[in-house]
Length: 175
Image 1 (cartoon, rainbow, N blue to C red):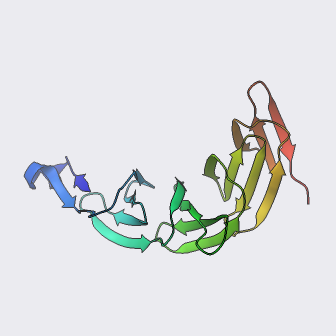
Image 2: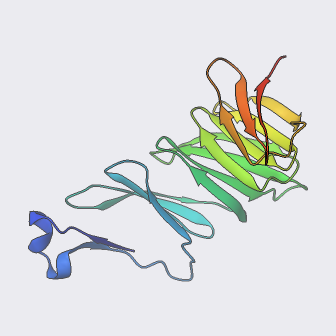
Image 3: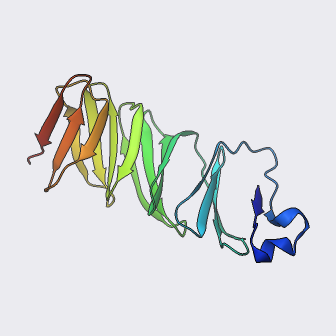
């Protein structure tokens, strides 16, 4: 992992290189910024949070003892779908910018699309979907009644736009 600074501070360093870290025997398929000073490197069994702009330091490293099936993030959260190590199915784990675990929840089913929108984790695949809040409450699990290409929170409480191949539906979730 290499961090460069092409500003004044970086010009004092060789090749503008301000931080480097080796990940031995680890594949790092995703690196992203959560904000201007917080970056994250996701490895095959861990993730590392870095902080800084003019200089960079490792803030925290979190080991994940399960296989990562998918990763998703926003400017507030880092989330993972992990293979459940104790039984069949999967787990959703959500972390904040400091590396603190916010939720750890079992889920059933496989979803090809997973994202964070506001304070919700939205998962969908074809006509089926699942919505979990950032407090771990499952708000929906079922069939949309439409082959979803995208699911977007709409204005109002528990309202979602479900975009299909040739239609757009407004869905209201009720208790």
